[in-house]
Length: 290
Image 1 (tube, rainbow, N blue to C red):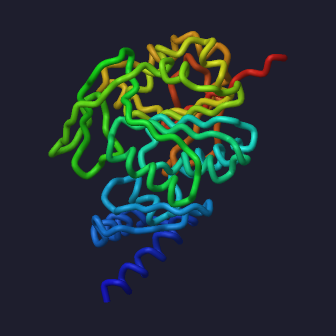
Image 2: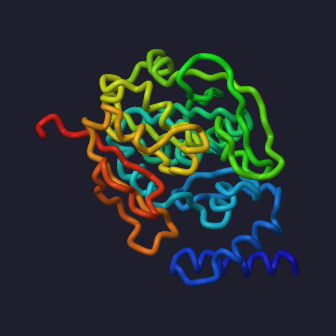
């Protein structure tokens, strides 16, 4: 009986995901509660396999909808053929690392980085399930080599932050930190690279250490935009947009899946208020002819 109810709820969720009918959130929560901590092996909408557990919000969405952040997924999928290297900072369970590896030409490289050792293990597992080549490193990206405290709500390990995340029963561990340029100096890579950053408010710390010269290695930069998490980590949006590296990029916003409008990238001026519903920023390197 429980299996029948689960199948029914899941069918409704998939229909809602495709049609945007009301009621999806309630059914989504019910399905995840029923299956809390039960291991799932799924095949995503993009054809690769992932080992997941319902609990964390990222894994819940992947289990039910077979996709995470569909607008960003579509962009990375479409750009994979032109990039030689993909760096996934804040890789979580490895969804975007696997997505790039699935669609990139043979021989292209993936580097996945996460501060949470549990997420590093999950990412390695998921890359391995698909026989994708990729290196996974356990570092927190900060502005100096050292050690900091990583915190996350017990039921949300993919949302670990060097700031102070909201939630009860926070887990805390000490993690090694390293400036992003230190990692880049170890790598042999090209100017046709993609950088994706989702480190729960510490994105600005990464970009403050990234000189325009080093940033020029990246043709595309995607990063999470959240004024709340920036504040929790002691940063402000003004600090972000004042950085000189953006002078070489066109800036676009990617709307969240629950925004009440078309889910397409939009051009946004760097000095204006970010439109409500934008959760991801896409920085596209300007062509040399412009």
